Length: 334
Image (cartoon, rainbow, N blue to C red; front, side, top):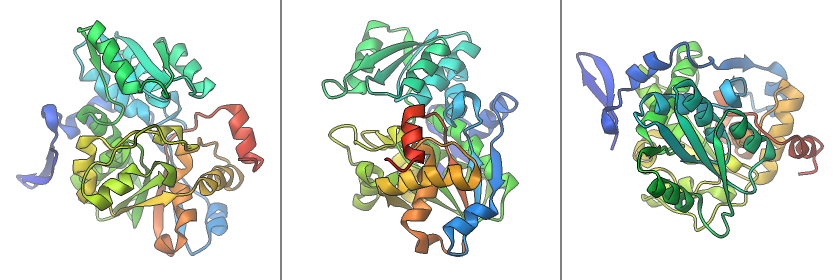
């Protein structure tokens, strides 16, 4: 379990499993990841109303098109295995494929057979092997376990429930809080909880006072249910949400231990507000976001009273979306 807010000689440190030192990960990734792009849009503020002042943290320009490269590179650098395995709907798979290539490793990614074509192509394009699975017949985790059993020298990397992954994600929280410190809250998409956990850790390390709020599809609200019920709740199958990055079965155990006390809450977002947020980012901020990437802004649309008059950073976590789906979203057909 992560120990948050430990002090040694006046410096906050975090004890993550496996001896992962968050500050050392920050140093290791410095210069190897693209800095996030922070954008304020008066037009977006006017469209939202409620005296909201929003800053977008755009990870659409990160290597491989999403924040996941931060996590994947941290994991690859921290692994001694010659081959890496993971299960992913696409973004972490592409990120780990590139990270493996840059660290001299091989990579295989288990993906649902209904994954976005652009994401399957990206994983293969970065040099990894893709193993497609029908998740109605077999879970990604079950297939990953089969591959791991067949290759004992390979290491399986969770896209979210791994201390190296969480530490890598915390670099985004660090950039946000160091560059726009005068914020009331940071709103973060939640799937397995790795990104939100990283932002919470960065906030605590830096001693920032802002709250961290999660945004999760109501169709995939296992994280919200987990925080309400005080235990990790598990979906019996992958949720049918537009947000493929949130189609996880549950929060990671490490992430639950961090988020159960570190989050100010989770806004459960309806699908129509996710679609609205994708369109609003395009129309008011000229930003192309995938549905999961629009979740933070969608939370503001879902519960405007919660954020009224606040200064909020919305993390736009990625922009990898099939052109056909994106066209339908922008046209208001989804």
